[in-house]
Length: 556
View (cartoon, helix red, strand yellow):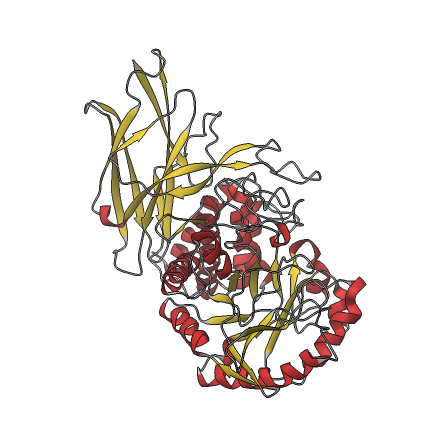
């Protein structure tokens, strides 16, 4: 005989297999048009016959909003490297194991429970863009066993609030590794199948708030071992003939068209020099007049003072002219080299100077942690690690960006799989407080090992080969049909960005000072990237404060 347990669970709760989850403390989920409301149904079972009796159950959803509701299974993934040796107390665990993350579609009517373990279903309600009228809508969940006997029934409500959220103004890029898609699906780069997969992943990137896309004019020189290579992915075709260069931009045009089709407004041009100090050129491929493919530049090509410098003098003006013709140059952001430090400041500075005039009328940004590099004028738009951002804030740096990755593992927000979801969600509130121009993360879909020594299966390896805390390299998983499967973390990130829009809407009526005061009073503290509420209840309380304050302001 099989007995079942069911619990409605908050979307910010992670249902661990060996721990009964905390029951959701509300029966009404509230949001604005354009948002997505999420919650979970956790389930477990016990049986006394060594698994011979049925462990399947069915779920039926009854609601006027049923067409906007989607159910997915929360899949467990292995975390062999859950955290660094240095960590804080705000982790779910430091133990290796299986943790919930990937959101898996399922079409069968029945779901199988595991005896003595907890699993969950992820339930989304998409409020659309104004096609659902404000009001309260009941959602009924009916759970039955395989023969049809009713096991449990829940009724909760989705309330669509009055109000129009402003457009997202935060620039947001999650590094989009198109080469990893070709590698994982084993399709030729820029084949029609590759383009189909690229478009599918673009759609999902937009869903989690991406409005700027890493654009590989050359194979991005990112996370690549010195002397090593990533799969060539180059949107610009180059012909090298009679010691002269000519360029074709058809692939780049197609890329831009796809971006526009799905609402991506900004291009992040891949880095012009090697990572960590700009000592070499990136890999640049060309065709000779005989039709032979050749490598023009790579690790053995000095970044500055040689043929690559002369090449950029020809290439960059033509690239800019093409981007201007496409009416996207103003929305294109260039990179020199990722994460320079004070040990390689001279080589980085030389690379900056080599293209300064060529990019004088362009937006240029780079990730860094050193204020000294910024002070010397080498970085126009600093993208600063959140644990190093305070000196930049204190100096009143304009056009400031923020990022986190593997190194931001203590005290500050991040989204490793073994971190609580509230630590992911708080990013939006902090970006609002700090008024950063943009947020960057290196791992939308990095499916390689550290330094791209080999390709990995993201369902089996979530840490780039025990290199980074699990989840750092990617927030989406490759689906069987060439689509991207979201993760709990990507949906929570979307909620974080939605928080910014809600706070901006409140600011329009109440003023920024009042909103900042409301955030502090709700949190009971002054927030910073190092100090912020750890409990998920803060987000419900903050939304309630916004709703109440707007009602009082309008007299409704």
